[in-house]
Image 1: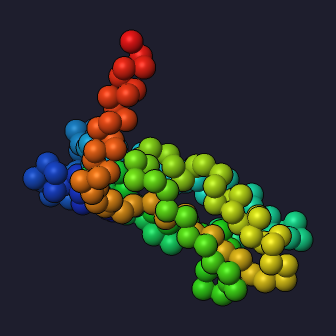
Image 2: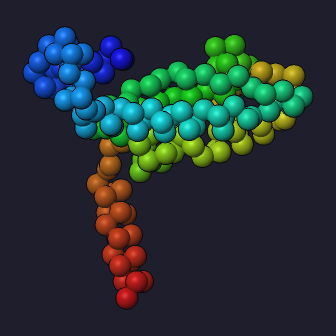
Amino acid sequence: MNDAWQKSTAADHHVSNEEVLAHRELYGPTARDVLRYNNARRVQDGLPKDGLAEDENGNLAPVYLLRYQPEAFGGEGAAAIAIGNPDTADNTAVIVPEMTTSVAGGTLDDSDAVNVYEESARTDLGKDTAVVMWMGYDARISARARCLFRDAARVGYRSRR
């Protein structure tokens, strides 16, 4: 049994770790456990797609998990995946998707980072490239942006009539 799951389950139910181990059938996964599992799967789903990125010679690029915080931002999660090694790369790009995206929403599973990596590697031949897909930040919405969202909702509503 996963030690972290055991400790969080014991804390959630206000019992000892030994009680959880002795009576596993009584202490199924909590909402927190499910959230952590779902976000882990979303990150895991993004890794293989990023692992298909090729450099200018057709070699598969290494993929690194740089950040993983499944409970960050109210359960939306935070993660960063790098294609290529950002510590040694000559060229590094960072992709930060728009503010309505999240780990929980599956954004790491899109192909933006792969496309940017492959195009960058072909553009600067002979140079190492890295692309970091960064998910998880607290986007502050300005008063202007709130107005834009409000107007967009109104226009969308009218168009559906």
